[in-house]
Image (cartoon, protein in one colour):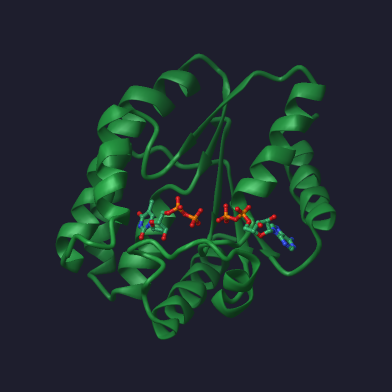
Length: 203
Ligand code: ADP
Ligand code: TYD
């Protein structure tokens, strides 16, 4: 078993907020950890991120998938694997399931192909816990008035398919996924995550 915890959910679902609270808790318990984000985490992946989120660049669905995967491959090789192999806890803001939810369910690209590519770039690492914050885009976009990036410019229909995709992913592996109603308050969500964390890692 690895010590890998991933946060998933649509844009503005509360991932960063919950990651910060989990980080504070781990510090209180003197547990060492590293945090990564996707796309990002190193020079190459941060540059790919800039391209992917730039609303002035036109990117077809196939190229979009490949860029997310390239960013993941580098993040895994350069960051995540190294930390996990030293026995550290690793928290990641998005990972393989984002490609399945956004490009697989949202953009309707071939899911088997995405699965194979995810296995290839992650070298088969599977998170111990994946928290999915389940919320509708109509609610999450009202929480944030910053300008939309290229991905956030996708339609409401697209986001509904992504939301449904996340629910399907969670249902397929109920032991590994913690599907949480993202409209609960911040503290309630944190308590659910911390309970699962303590149980999983025997704290
Ligand atoms: P993400 O990282 O998923 O994009 P954030 O954590 O940045 O989401 O949250 C987006 C916005 O919603 C922030 O302004 C944050 O303070 C607010 N927020 C996060 N969680 C909740 C919650 N459970 N209820 C209400 N507002 C929230
Ligand atoms: P980011 O700002 O990190 O997400 P959030 O708005 O939730 O804080 O933006 C990353 C965007 O890229 C987000 O819209 C989700 C999308 N994405 C994919 O479509 N596929 C992927 O594989 C990943 C990792 C992200």
